[in-house]
Length: 393
Image (cartoon, rainbow, N blue to C red; front, side):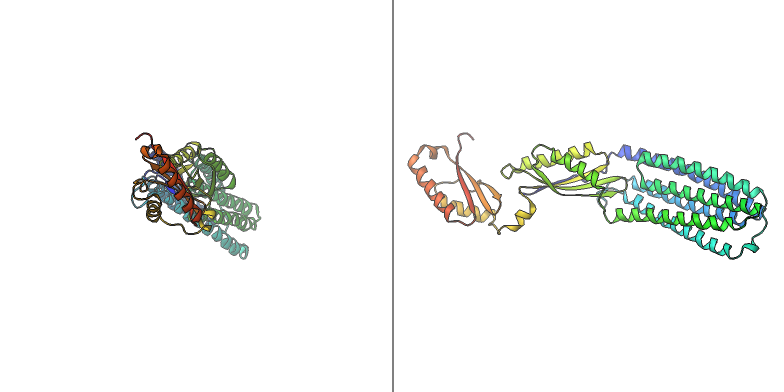
């Protein structure tokens, strides 16, 4: 017996998803406002103070605006409910945004490395800077660090990898502002090599962070499972469900901040289809209740280990088995068609319900039992044929 129980029509609580999307967009608007102010100020002061590094950092801040608009687009579309073409919802928008933001970080980090290399080769050509550039760099550093801490707190509360990526983008900007501040301060103090050296170090850090974020997004896109500890907890929840004998082929994958689960459960092979369905639905409900991150659970019901089921011989289908039962029982026993069949291992068991009057005729019942016994002993696929007496409708 095999049955699949799942529910794909809803991607979580729509009200909660809408609240989550609104909070994500509110945090993103804060980031946009701060980045616009800092960009204008950095470029203006950089041009006035002849600080090309400050102008470059201002242009770098513009990349945040692109990231912020991408986050807004992804969070808005990711909150859309499931539909016919997207039965699991639209959470992959967040994954795609995390991937793009990671690649942006990697590109910015690589740019810092190349720029630092060029500056190290032309230290004497660096212009004299106005002290206003240092103050602007310090203000930018404080603003970026504050933005990072605010957005990271929101991202952790919402469990959003996309917002985490955007928060670290702000931290990358803070690191670049630190590079600018150290470089300008070192240049004003006479140590012109400090700026390109620090730029190279932070450029490597930004590149590494971008690669890690993109790699995590890629792992989700290729359906990498959740960590072993969480899988063990889900397995324990399913195993503790009444009627589940054991769990095998438990698989998980992430979709943004949610988890999708597939599980094969083994149940008693002689229970009814409806009871097997009930056990599957109960296991699914228990997992979703005990693990809030789980969006949906697909439960496949087995009567035995899948390896055992595929190792046995090919058994006849119901039509052939019922025809054989009709032959064994004889034409005057009209109970073969509604017989209950159990496929157990590489054999079949049948439960045949006889009319009540048959049970009262000992001679006829004894002859029928002998015929059934002889057929079972001579058969390669019959394991048992049980004759049951129906005493009530």
